[in-house]
Length: 345
Image (cartoon, rainbow, N blue to C red):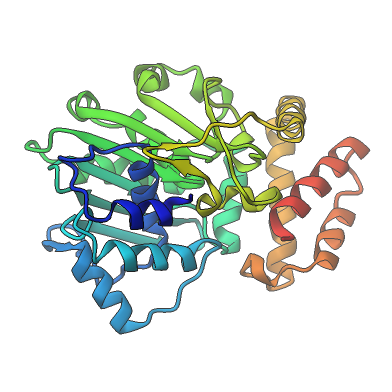
């Protein structure tokens, strides 16, 4: 059973009958993959029910971009007719895509009166992936700054039970937002969930801001996690079963669940090995070397007018690797493995 099966099975159960659980958490974290521009109100422009938003989406037949967006649209189509989800209020929608970042966020008030803030993960745009790679040397990045501002702005004094979450980069942004939240907001936050999102630089993991919220952080990754193994993160993460292969395990619609929980699994040797190699290499490279590596990589995309990862073919990957002739063989091999895993499905 995946999350769509879960929604179908429990569509008529209210949150009073069937309290909020980790599968609901994942579902709400994925909704920000949908482009709700001009559908869900921006700041101070009111609220709209999930049912109303889904009906407008269907009517406008928007074009979507993203690895998971098709299933997300299918998911909200089922949610809009469910007793459990249809009356969820959506508001404070924000989407920004420019030369520096790809950012999205939305606030939701659930029928049980709790608040869920979801941060969008990386779509297929090159600028979104470049921002992810910049995390190897830059903190806070543009989206991380926006996430912190967004959380402080969206939470009101009357909001009580607050959950924050996100899938992929959205999970990183959820943690970052909580790290930099006003103290009175941090006290209201019940849980911060990172669904297979990248971690942080070592200095941030060891910071006072991170330590203050660490007990509230929950990290969930699939068996073959790749994105979630980037950078430093909590060692106490949950591994779940996924039907996808390689990078497609990152697609949360492949994650398996039973009753109210995601099915537990053990991390694969390949995922652990990649994590160790990435951590080791990150520690070996100086700040200047990291910056040059990322800039050189994405300059090649830009010079070839590649703006979306869907445009990348296997020949472009090997063209990229040739540009790293000055790097040692170990780094070249690691980059080759990482780029093929992420960009070649």
